[in-house]
Amino acid sequence: MKSEMTIPFTYPFLTVIVANGAFPWHPVPLSFLREASRIICCDGATESLLGYGLEPDFIVGDLDSLSQSLQQRYSRRLHHDADQETNDLSKAVHFCTERQWNEITILGATGKREDHSIGNISLLLRHAANAKLQMITDYGVFMPLTKSERFESFAGQQASIFSLAPDTVFTFHGLKYPLTGQTLSSWWQGTLNEALGNEFYIEMDFGKALVFRQHRTSAFGFAEDVAVQMVS
Image (cartoon, rainbow, N blue to C red; front, side, top):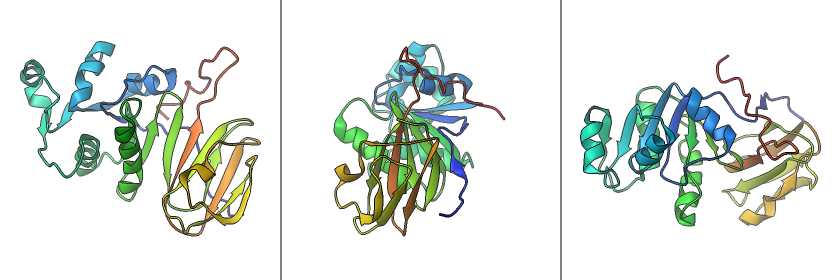
């Protein structure tokens, strides 16, 4: 096997985009909100962020989900983008990369309408060439995969691999259900796997995929990996 750098559970990416899905409740995504160097809200997420006790540094989108009172209150923080060919999350990512904020944590992108959740998750691969992205949910973290990578893990961690190119050939190492030189022609085929130790390795010949790893939890159900070093 090649010896690529091991991808950690989460990266300390302090530019945070809050999408207009379900606002996070789990301590891992909330820790990123508290430590963020800047928070960019997709317009409809602004009220949820304010309800949590934080304010956005910028609000991006077509502003159709933002009340007039909040538009007036944050008029100097608004970035109106009326493009109907992209959703607000894409607009927010583009807003960041235009300013060279290329290491981004996305929160609140899932948990409401399933079609919105799937669309938001797929955007990780669309923008992977221009930014380093991670999408942290209340259950785990999604990361885009465009080449063979090694992932930090722990015994028993649930992991799922979604191939977006049906001809990509995969080999899995360190997972309970190994794969050797096979394709994943359907999304479900790489789901609900389980790590055997402190890392697993995914080989791929080409293509694009998404990797999901669940949060580490203690016997009491609370996240043990909250104490991520947010600042090196």
